[in-house]
Length: 471
Image 1 (cartoon, rainbow, N blue to C red):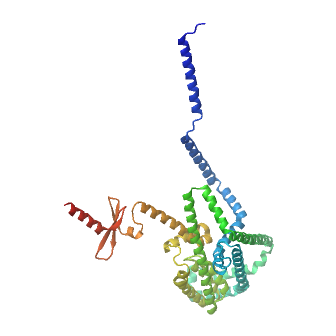
Image 2 (image 1 turned 60 degrees about the vertical axis):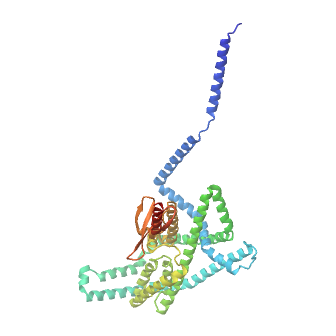
Image 3 (image 1 turned 90 degrees about the vertical axis):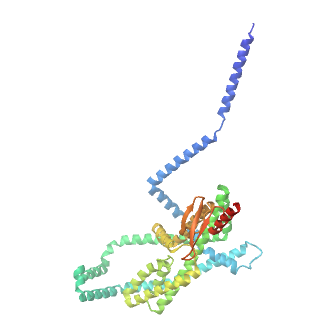
């Protein structure tokens, strides 16, 4: 059979084009476009974050309950971390001072670490035991005496008020005070406590829950001490493992910055909290000595209150002095006045001698920012926020300051706040002209450029010299 060459060429062309289409289809099938993958991943992350944010807003109570549940489970571990962090300076003291000569050729000696950890916890337990052994009997005696004296204090207050209204009858007419009725009602309440015996079941239930809470807290503290022993003994290993995980999961520069920030936070917190505890203890000891010399009643209770509130900067001592003054005022108004004078003297001595000697300017914050941090963190986290607010805000403040100064250096501008306080204007060449008042009669401007920072008169002199040379 005869086949035309034209037909053969046409069939060959068709086969060729079919093969090209198959190859093109195969290439298109396995082609991977990374840009589309990035767009899709970004869209997925945005949608997922939006859903999580919606659930966080609408189910916040459920999420918060879940967080509290997890925190209750981890409370012994958290307590152990806090105890280990607070005892770490004492451990370093024993290692670098008392047991420095134990295996000095080794940087990390197990024997030295065991001796230091043992000494640290023995000293801590000894101090706590001695503190409570001295405090609890005196505290119980003071509270018992205060409760026994309440009726007498009420009678004294009634007699004082009656005498005040008798000498000033216009006060009673102005405020319409029925003193007799008020104290009679109060006395009936105190005498009628026995009428509330049917409600003893509820009281016992509340007492049982309180006792269980105390036992649970003591168990958390006990387990926390055990956890703290492990953490302090192997603190370098735990720190190394944490850094290892950070370097594995995050970029190198980010990890280095994170470690630097954590080191700065550790220095700020450890120095501030340890110094604040020592400062509050010194003030409390001086307060106890002063109360004993002045024969002020309830010296132990007052000392404990002043120690706790002295941990709060600025307002703490004055907040703690208010209930103490009212307590003394019930016994002897004159001694209450002496106590107020004692607190004022102690605060002056603390602010000018004890505080600068122990803490110095450790935080680098001005008085305004200290007050701001106390109000902010106290409102957010209560009493604990007032204590940790200052070092926390100091870390945030230092990070923001470092970022601002870095950006200013990149722009070739000065970083000193003093220069911006006297800024006059910015010249078009990206330079900053600043007026510095050396005296009242003379103002010497300085020009800061991106490349250099020299006095303005030198720059102007160089420009004039250049003009003369050209001429």
